[in-house]
Image: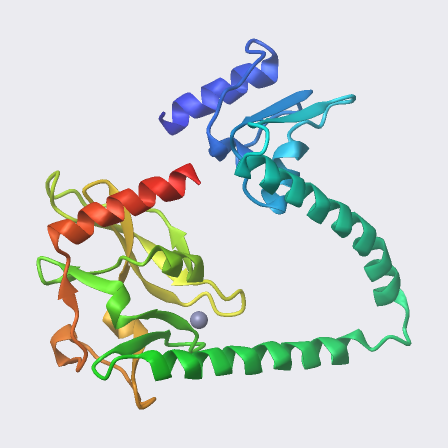
Amino acid sequence: MTKVKQKNVLGFFKKGVHRVVIATSVAEEGLDITQCNLVIRYLHVTNEIVRLQSRGRARAENSKYFVIAEKGSPTLDKEQKNKRCEEIMNEIVPELQEYLEKPENNWEKEMLEMQKVIKDKEDQMQRERTDNMSDDACEFQCMKCSSLICLSEDIRTIEGRHHIVINIEVNGRLKLKRGKPKFFGPDEPQVGGKIFCMKSDCQNELGTLCTYKDIVFPLIRLKLVRVVNKNGDGNKYKQWKQLTCRIQELSDDKFCSLVEERKMNLLL
Ligand SMILES: [Zn+2]
């Protein structure tokens, strides 16, 4: 559906011309949906935050929120877990607010201590990761904040020149911003958009997005990242061929397994 069509549909809903909107998960957040009195989610549950957001769609007085799921299904389990998380949050938030408002509680100091614990844990994880790396593998880090982006084994090339990240877990460490890709041909990789470091205090640009046969992959730009080898030596490179680690070409078999993996991810 085009943006214009989407806008029209929502406009009709707002005016009451349409009484029902059927949408994908896109309606959970981001879209400006007017208040409604009934939200039904069909076999679709994600986390407690999205639960709150989609439930928030039912903002009219006496509004209702339903999830349709099979008894004993993972969807139902997940929804119940999310419900519990929301209840815990509702219990904790007032206590937390009260705590933060009391001057004798030195929460800033406590937060710094907590951050240090997290940082130590991250460092330890980083060390463990490096220990598990094969000798010719390397790690790609954000140039600005040094946080891990991916390992060389998470990257494949298309036609030997587009370096795409195939490990979908890496997408969680990146902020993806779609943009109009340059169109070369249906089976050609199309490059457009941007990727950024996920850390809120960093947000450094790391590359672009690459659409290849309808799948969108992050594409690392070498000059925007630091490459660290197994010994912990970090370097900046201008050309991929200068790297000591080997990056494989994306095979047809691997591409098919990625398509399957992404389909599963959509279903989960
Ligand atoms: Zn960063």
